[in-house]
Image (cartoon, rainbow, N blue to C red; front, side, top):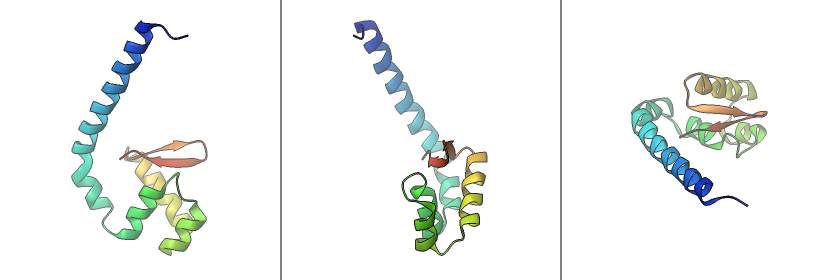
Length: 91
């Protein structure tokens, strides 16, 4: 059973996470629009962790290597995180 103090602390952490996400999104919005400048690139970013790479290849016409390289570049720029074997978009 979780104590009332732990529930309050968890609620506070969730609220902090929400605020940080909003601030980070505002800070990177313009740059993200520049990077995701075409529908196929946007789909690769938004589909990370949700759509399989072979399906992204089929939908975009990009090679698997190109998709992997995009994900790696975005991870280095702080726009994506690697979760296990797949990537996840942060924004």
